[in-house]
Structures are given as structure tokens and as C-alpha cells.
Length: 120
Image (tube, rainbow, N blue to C red; front, top):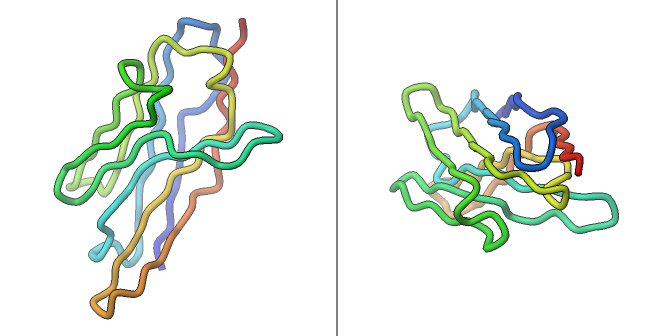
């Protein structure tokens, strides 16, 4: 099992910044991807940004140039720096971790979610 604890959401005006943090604990040694997804009311959950254990980072087109994902292996943590926030970034943000076991079984883990609200 992997536990994910998030922090850093809140209310900010358009153009402002927020930083989300997520720390993993438990069976973390086989995690090969961590990142963030978000879900706005009435919408499906969508990828925001992910980072692999090799350091490859992928961003949704809608956040490229505004959001920066980084990781700290020593702290088992990932961080999402969100700048130039827009009202359409308003959503519940979920930390995600994927564990790939040696038998190729994939496990997906989710944090409890943190609300990000951007006012216009």
C-alpha cells in the first residue's frame, strides 16, 4: 500500500500562484510515476502533470508554461508550482502514484484531494 498526503490548496485571485505538495509513504520503492490530476465539477478527472522515476515530466497542454512539477526523491515528495492561475484551473487536485510490481501488476493510488479555487 501507498499513502499520499497532499497540502497547499486554497483560494487565489487570477494571476496568482499556489504550490501543492504531496508526500508518499508505505510501499514506495516500486513507484515509477507520481503526479497530479484534477477534477472540476461536471468534468472527468484529467492529468495535470506527471514525473517518472527516470525524471521524465509530462504536462497537460493547458498548463504548459504556467505549472512546474518537481520531485524530491529523498523526501518521497512531488511539488506542483502553479503560476499565472486562471479561473479555469479551479478544481480538486489529486496526487497520484503508480506502482509497478515485478510481476507487472499496476497499482494506482490517490490522495484525498485538495481544493484549488481561482477567482476572477
